[in-house]
Image (cartoon, rainbow, N blue to C red; front, side, top):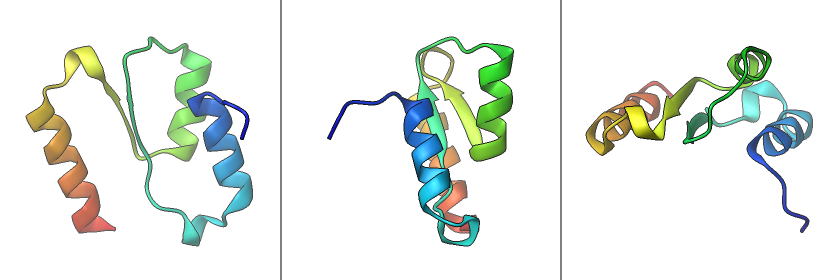
Length: 70
């Protein structure tokens, strides 16, 4: 399988699975993103978490909330 970045993965994921079959996606990244990338992400994911701005406890809490609402 060729390597791909997160944006390529999301594109493939959205194309491959209808919305009602997709698991919620929370992006956890250390990269800075552009406004355009943020807009694209917001259309495909339930949240974006910056590694250097989020503790493991906060990340765990976000994931737990997603699991409860899914």
